[in-house]
Length: 132
Image 1 (cartoon, rainbow, N blue to C red):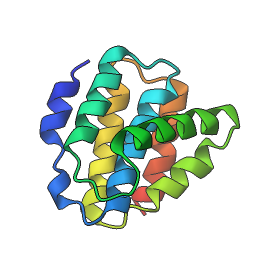
Image 2: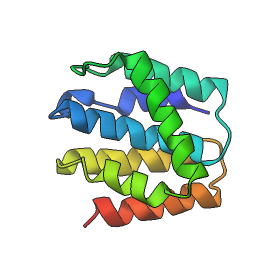
Image 3: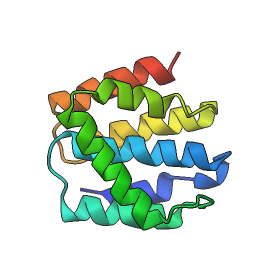
């Protein structure tokens, strides 16, 4: 996977607030989790990216990562993916953030060369929510 190229294309400086930064991170992490396999490279990428994000939350970045990962798995296990993704996507209020989110989730989903059904469904839903 070519995650290093993603890190260069992500400009968190345009993010207006912590909530949007978190939502963007959550959506990308979900796309990594969606296919059921998280590689060490994907984990390293997400942790490295999180390390570069301006952070003003009470919770530590490490705790946030772990909690978000568990939420992604829970959404899949309880069949509430649509609700989870819709909730997170609606937190993106800036058009730039919405466009960046769509580009990132598409790119992340395609990095392994395969687009599985869960990834495609997530992208379709996000497209509906974010591109209104």
